[in-house]
Amino acid sequence: MDFVVRFWGVRGSIACPSPYHVRYGGNTSCLSFSMGDRHLILDAGTGIRGLGQYLQKQDVKEATILLTHTHWDHINGFPFFAPAFVPGRSFRILAGHLIGAGGIQEVLNTQMHTPMFPVPLDAMRARLEFEDFASGENFRLAPDITVRTCPLNHPNGATGYRVEYGGKSACYITDTEHTPGKPDATILALIEGADLVIYDSTYTDDEFPAKVGWGHSTWQEGVRLCRMANVKRMAVFHHDPDHDDDFMDALGAEAKAVWPGCFVARESEPVVV
Ligand SMILES: [Zn+2]
Ligand SMILES: [Zn+2]
Image (tube, rainbow, N blue to C red; front, side, top):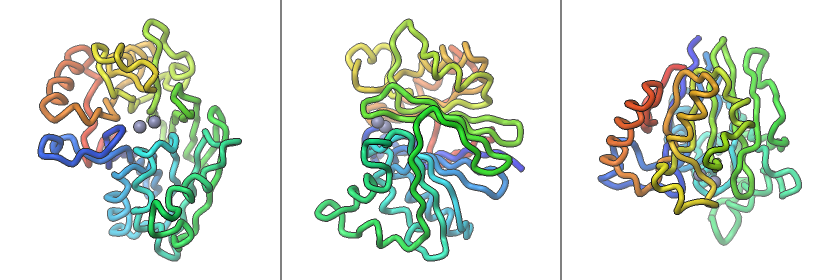
């Protein structure tokens, strides 16, 4: 029973469907973790539209959606997630940053509220369960699927995830800002020994000084953390829309030369954990 990660959206900030973004993809953050016949969805950026079509084709009836946070690029595909409109489907939607800040149901409700969107949340006919937890809590999604979480350093908060299944572990660490020269101990503890870490690599170390306070990190910091924590592989993720295909090709080659465990996430390219 393989543990397979699929990238449905790899961009940060805003979708960028252009001829210069076709090789890596222009959709915003959305991943699926398939564990046997179970499906876990991470984030609901514009990439979740394609995932929804895939789940419909596979006749998948239920899934859990874990949200890192609710900035636009991580939720604005949710109103276009087709399975949520189908009676008989069932989705659990969890977020770790909204206790005392409205809660996840209210935030998604607001996103689809008039006059910003024509179709309200309650038009979704699937069974939707909304749950808020506090980043740092751990839980089981099934007897053989464990989720550990940690708070990330991001404006309005965000949650990092570690999912363990079948003796393998994959971590999803976005969006988060590092402090140069001070490795994030919370992240190090979460990713220790993981098989795969998907990391907020919005900027390069050269670009970072001009973006302090924007809530993001660099692929170089990701590599430093992964090496310190004995991680096997790292996916460069949350690509800046200003980083076109040629830029990402060069970045990928440079990253691989620095650490062979590093690769650049591409939309719809499956990775076995
Ligand atoms: Zn983001
Ligand atoms: Zn964000």
